[in-house]
Length: 233
Length: 197
Image (cartoon, rainbow over all chains, first blue to last red):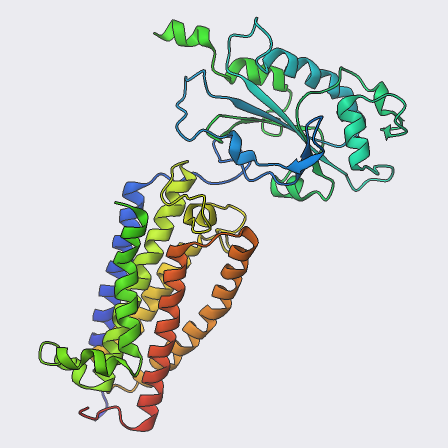
């Protein structure tokens, strides 16, 4: 006699329901006890890693660790936490050479050395890439000459002597990203690009998401101020 | 609870399951045959070990998924300055998801162990059904494919110079599951499937 049903279906259905229940209980426990934050480069996401060797004016090129900047216990409104302003740039990009003056002014005003600034310290970092454009041939020597604004170094930045670039010499670290690894990881579309990152490693602002707004305005409006803490108390 | 002590909750059932799926499991389980009658046959022992291993593998995979969520919040669970630091491995955004869909490895592990558990559990409920042969072959193939993923993940650990002990437990569970499915498949093919001992 021909069966129109499967005698063994019940066993497999029972097993499937029990195993699926176990799976969903596991997922529900995770959903109920954690609030995961995605890693990415948009505001509200956790900053991806930034890797490579960096130059900080002395001691040659050493391994950079962005993680060391983060304070997982930082809470919004805490002015003691240190923020990070990150610039992706190319020493042969004319806009980057021009914006070096803004970076000089911003780092001088917000890196903790300016008594007029009552906000949290902002640590500046530059990640230097070499764009795939004719004439953009960079090197570590060129990065050093750009950062230190070394005159007559023989290094050319966007067609001029690197020592003639706008602004003063920079005191913040420059990371070698000539292989574009960091740029690709951060999905940077062009240079210069800027990111302002909270002390807990969450991106607060990016120039790509806020066209027309500059880094200085973002720092002033977003970085925790002691005066705001006092007002709020 | 210390993360390494908590790890024992997964390591102990994984190793128990591992011993049960091995031929040596007969020695270990002989004293328990009265309490667990299924241990008296080769098929029963291997199926019991396989189910135990799959449950432990699922649980430790869910735990790694939980750890990756916690680390993404900025928290710590098993961070260490030694080579054994699962936070550094599971929390590394460059390696902690699959390269195609961006799914956390812990989530993939949990889903795969659920499939393996379904195959093993269904087989244990109805061992003489016509589909058992296919289920055992599928389980063997899936766990064998798992070795390729384990190879990739171990290469990540070598690059990071860190070892994730929770991940390693899941890898051992996959090895035990492979042995279990393979031995059951061979047992099923040999015609000794329904022998009493």
